[in-house]
Length: 359
Image (cartoon, rainbow, N blue to C red):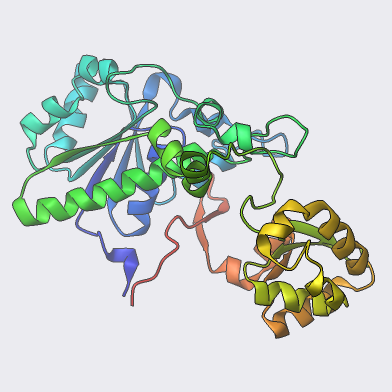
């Protein structure tokens, strides 16, 4: 199925800025929708246009960050406090299918861009809004604050050290996925009934919803998750890192007893299968430190290439820890790229937000 034209008949008005809302707009643009990004003329557009790394061309109009979530859109700079600009936006809204917004409730109402107002001029529209805490709470939401408030910072980092923010704005990314799902359900509802809907997604709720097993460990077992690096709280060795003979970092993901036994064979540690400290997953969790000392000592005797090759042959899930240069040199990754040009006509590349196929 050609997904690039799947939503070719949809018109979307994007009133959102920064990351979460714009990434939803880009998702629909990749699937063929017309996405009109409305930007604030008085501030020279989306704030992320100016978020440049020191290594970026200072004369370029827009940052790499901006391009990451704004591919395939049409941009229109408006001052919504000016009658002419507001009227132009309302004209676009009369035949739009979806609005994506991250206005605070009070701001949306003040601007005349709340759901009730827009629904009154287009009753089939789907109004999709992102906020920090919900429509009755006007506190601003920033990703690092959400990571702190929803527990993510408390569990991310190394044992015995301070909390560490995840290196992407994950709360925004998770909220964008929630909003996309809500929009798709609302589209299905409209297809069945002809009625529009208001869809709400919050950074806070999305962060909590994504705690999955960590939340369940607390709710059902009374286990308060602690910072433990990349290690898994329920499985060992999983997320543990070995250093090969040639100093390559390799991460383990042995989720079954059979995989663990095969790992011991590769590392010439078959005797550990009968050690009561390591012969069951629960025991390995208790004695993880002692286990990793032995696995690491054995790993220093084998090259990364040989270790990875043997593990692949035996079906043992392990992987080298690659930097982004290595990731994007991989042909599999290159298939996930979109190409375009910036406003100076220079070539740019961004990663697709659509990572699924439908046959």
